[in-house]
Image (tube, rainbow, N blue to C red; front, side, top):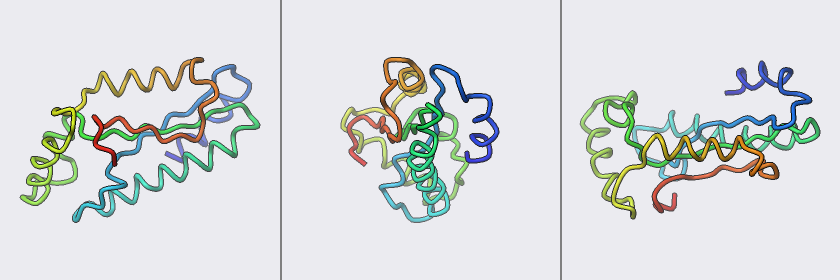
Length: 137
């Protein structure tokens, strides 16, 4: 995340709607066993997002992050985090905890990204926006 941003920043300077959208996860607030490394990387993304927002404000580059809850994706189905029984069991237990009664869709996350990239959000920077069907993590 940091290397990609560092590489892109020189090309973004001076552009009217320059912004960086990082991807985090609501898992940062859940502290599930067996997922410590993944949680730590997403917590680092949140911290980096907030620091970069302040550092890049003078260059008029906005920095935000999207933190999805359970979204119906290949990674959710075939978890790149592993297929051990503990991970599979946790994944199966997660969806019923979503107050909306379903997983999100990639399209819903994409619409949030489009909003954050648009002029309609030009005063939003340093935000970690959750999209989690009211899970509240």
